[in-house]
Length: 271
Image (cartoon, rainbow, N blue to C red):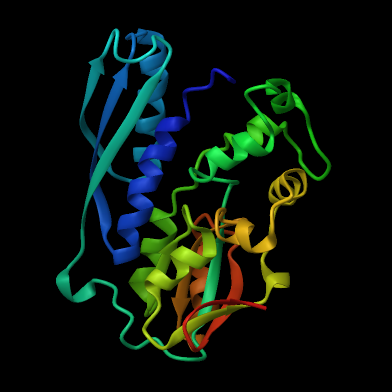
């Protein structure tokens, strides 16, 4: 609707590289694949420009790609972008949560917005098919239009997280994607451990409050669909939490903060 194609590539790279760092791996290379109804060179160049920018942010190499034109199979103005990354980590440094225990601290790395998940619901909330002009509006608490806020590219956390891994005994990392807190945080938890988070401590941007209000969405469904302002969480020993935050603050994550603690139990407790 907004005819903006130069950041979707960042989102594609982010969804891959932010996942591999959850294992403690450094992304090395990225490849992309673009399928389109009609090859419009200027548009393809914009898409690839975003992919290249994502690779710069992730400090990995764009080593190849493929563009496939599908006239008659796809509408002329549609395209589908896919990609994958290969990362490397020494076997003994692969993250495992065996030593995770009650008292460990959960740190939050803020998101830039909705990132790359929940857009089916976003379109439904704002009825974008019938009301595209809402994207040009600016709402209370937001410093950009709704369209600009929704299309803010996914933040790439590779460099700051790898810096933390060099100096801190990180026990778990979760990339908060589709499924929000409830489905992503448990992936990094040891059996018998739960993530206890005070809802008041979650720094949620105005965009999410707007979506909840306009869509009439329950708090549980919001936390089970969107990242709510938290793009990634790291679990670290309590005595190393301050050091981890110092490293994050010095390496491009000045707003990283303490989100919660590990307690006995299962899953996520939002209280």
